[in-house]
Length: 470
Image 1: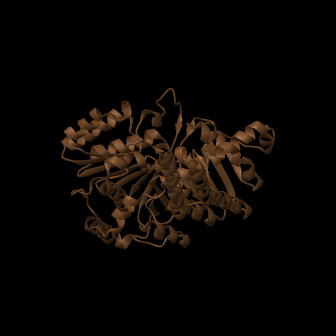
Image 2 (image 1 turned 90 degrees about the vertical axis):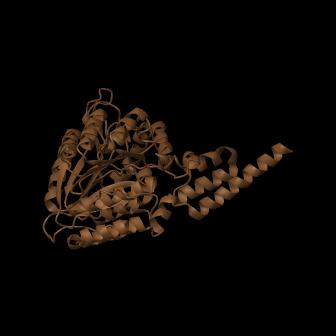
Image 3 (image 1 turned 30 degrees about the vertical axis):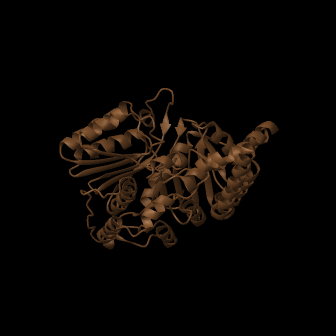
């Protein structure tokens, strides 16, 4: 009798969960898959749904919408500081992105491309050593290797000079980071915090699917770094097992740094419920010259699918050139169709993906798209000079460089941040970098696709069905 009651209870919970999926799910495919599975196999699927099924980061949403005075005050300070730098970007259709993410496009910025890990670390370490007031850091991954220890030593030295240090990490991405590493920072006076997917410790197991994938450095509110590079030897090509690493980052000065600081602050406030006292909101002088830059945060706390809409809007607005480099190309139908339409309009569409990434499943799934892309006139290239990890989109003279991959996780589940730069000179430097990368890649040809056997095609399509969890 108890057994029958238990089974009935599980089935009822499965039906309740299926109703929740139908009412809150984001895509028809996901709604159909989860709801059917929950009704048919609730004993197996219900635990999986509790961990992986939630798509809305509700706690963070509540924190941002309660009208909490500390965040309101910081946002008011930000808008006052950049008031005279706020601009309408060129092309002006990009203003939709500003409305989506709630931060402004600003002019008068200085933007420099950092085309590998050595350049990024040289700049980051130099700026930490020169910091006068504070350093804010958020990386998805911190390794406790030579690079991680060097960062630790420089942060401790900065703290000894009286510089405030705020050190954030994602608990899943940095799960190998030891308590000893963090304790050494805290003993020196650094403030350390995980992102904390939930403020309730008992519920954290049920929020493992959410990750904060951002990589942010802000020094004294004047300099910012953002891009695809985490903290570890492999990002400098110094890990013999991983081999050469291809990545990109952006160095920023100007009002855009103040906006990047706000992105960090929202994450810090969610985790710690306090505002760092040292943060400065520096009033920016009126300047029309310099790149127009938008710091675009996206994630599962937003009302709309800001990640998907970022890619869709940039792709849909391209007129002549659309070049994309991404380590994980597993788009949904909306992004795929938008890419195909761009090529049909006569846009030069190129997609650069790694010949071999660190995910076997993603490598198999990406190849299931090749025929559909090429049938629309899209050129696909396989990078062969190491692991391609950069996240770069170049649409005419607009470049987007940040932390977001072209997959379901980045577009819907992860917290991400992207620097959208509207500037012909900067776009030319990005185009030069990508041209060099294409020179180390081989094109996918119709002949190579035609030779793929049916079993391989079947496995690729099967892997593609798992795209929501890749």
